Length: 182
Image 1 (spheres, one colour):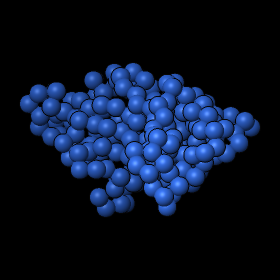
Image 2 (cartoon, one colour):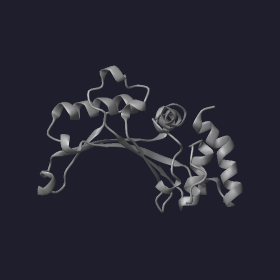
Image 3 (cartoon, helix red, strand yellow):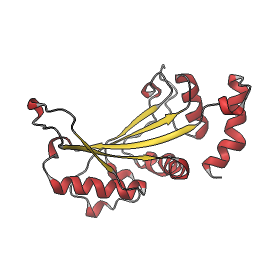
């Protein structure tokens, strides 16, 4: 079953029952997913930046936005306006498709994966996940990869606190470690 249909038919009633919401619009839901890659020390290497842009386009199905430095930092050899990363924000159906792919295909393919840490939630119930190797995504062919880079996935929810966000993502199917204290 598709994730959006599953949310409407199964997850939403469970959230309403557990937290006692009076209205289904008060229950937490997914808002957006942001995928971010920092280019770091390769900021002057245009081939690397194009490689990152290409992999983000393949992974998300959207063209990334280049993020530029707002300040100069001499210790890191960064000047104002230099490209320091790329990001993609997904909403609606692309977001649901991406999360389904992340849960069912990408996370199991990640090397030494033993579950996600529940400590990665912020106070508002948003979850941030780091992937060390972009080759875990099925769209990336390992034979064509020059340099392996990591990426950060931020899942924004409408939850009001950590507990609501954690419960939402658990019901969606995210594999969290059980033995960890929150």
